[in-house]
Length: 288
Length: 244
Image (cartoon, rainbow over the protein chains, first blue to last red):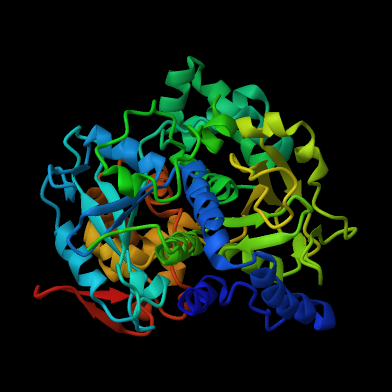
């Protein structure tokens, strides 16, 4: 238990850093009290780690981010739902017959070598937090961007029995169907402007947007002008920058249908118990 | 090498790693209890809360709106019976939160967790809160841009400026280059990323990289934008990766 206790503090360390520019007493007290109370309130870590893990994985599912944990030989230890779905499609990443994470086509640098190298890396503050790999996709979509995170950076793994290397990726090519409610409440967009903004965020030009929506160019220019007015942007690039920063990662909304769970060993799968059949949070919030 | 759940210590590892992964996200994520108290927040959220600009945490860990100091409304989410909760997902609530500093509103999306122990346990995560700060700069490290698309330093800086919404003229000024040179760099940038225009380029960059936080790099000179040189060697390749 002593070991567990000490490692759980890694989870909470720096959770409540006091801002150096905090406004006097209030900032300071909330910072320090926060740190002390949180680990206390969460109780013994052995009970609450399952909660934190479950909810942590749920966050990633809701953000439509695929997470897989691998050991140093790329064998899969754990995946979230989004990852299972994406691995199942085999478009970029897949699982081979021995349960190892593989790229569908050769990538550079080689995924398994990056994983092996990061798994044995000693924790050092100068190391990168993650290594990014471009993985070609058999379907002909743009390359999948896969980030292999450094476990040494995420946690103090010197006394860990199983070093697990997190690999995260997400679907870049999904439609950008941001729900009207998001635009209407915050930005006061009309329905036509919502559709227009969604198409712009998929990278379409003004002419392409007009074609897709079946409107003439002058109408498109009119919508664009109104979008500029409502967001305070002066140009199309600036508009995109504002929209993406305000809406964030919702461009990675994953709305595909879920496939069957890939062949993970039951022991691995039951690590935190099965999460309820998930529905993507953002898929709900943003489905048109 | 087995992976077992028996003594709970591996769960600690797993939780540490999953929460550590959330720490790298640009979006602030917060877990709150049924009483509205903060249970866990990732780095991006801690930065937002520490700024006391829109959302903050009081001395008792209650999540508050900075203006009016009213508590984050949890009641609206907690209506319904325990049976309904077992189903898990309520409609997420979307709020735009005013900021005293006059910056763009924070977008705050909250919803219950799909899983909620047995009833009113104040120690368990009850709701998930996502906080998006529109004024947070998005910056891609030169290392990533070089490795993925083969961009030079100048092209990498230009890609970052375009993501900030800069025009080509502004890029010229910030990089101290001529318009004709800038147009050449832009052409190379489009070639290397396989995009057809500035709009598509910016969309590609946001979609591929807008999720993860790169560590802040001081914007002094684009020539040095790799920041403090920290070289990380991966296996026995001649290639090294610079973290900037």
